[in-house]
Image 1: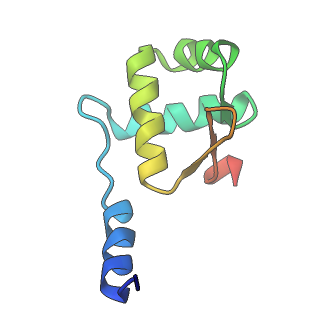
Image 2: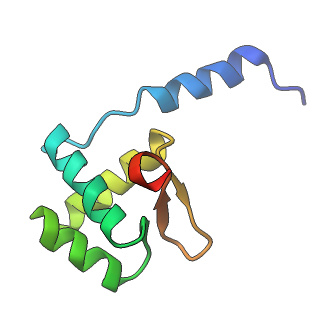
Length: 92
């Protein structure tokens, strides 16, 4: 099966059109980025999530939703351990 360039280009556009989670502001996302950068740019274990929640005031679900958004926007990569690593800003 051959992949058509149009299909591949469409997939790239979908990633570029990632929509931030409902109820999360651009300020929340900036605070998330700063908090994740302060703990080494990775979200893997409870020891990673708790400081991000405390620094940002976001709930666990909001942190998870922003992490999913970052993956969809190609601003993070999945880790084999099941977590993510940010790949932009201070974590680039």
